[in-house]
Image 1 (cartoon, rainbow, N blue to C red):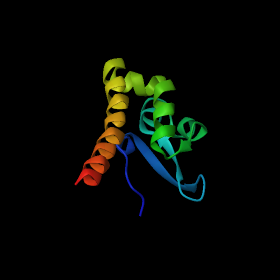
Image 2 (cartoon, rainbow, N blue to C red; image 1 turned 180 degrees about the vertical axis):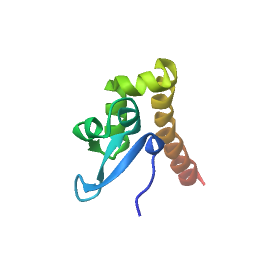
Image 3 (cartoon, helix red, strand yellow; image 1 turned 120 degrees about the vertical axis):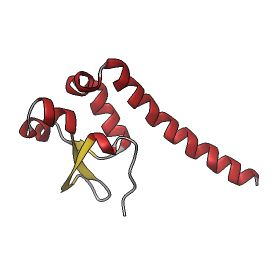
Length: 94
């Protein structure tokens, strides 16, 4: 069973495997503001890093959510990693 990351709600996960562990994904903003075929041309591996890299460059993502909110969405994914590290450290201290 695959785990979801905080950017999952901004993508459509495809059935096609990108590698042994991950599937390809496409950006919902690219679909909505351009076309599904355009989004397929810009597909990326469904990992938090690849999603984040796409969204940083995607004008449609920035257009849909606004520059400030788009940046806040991307910044929020960093806190997800930080929170997990804190949980591991506190469990080790116990």
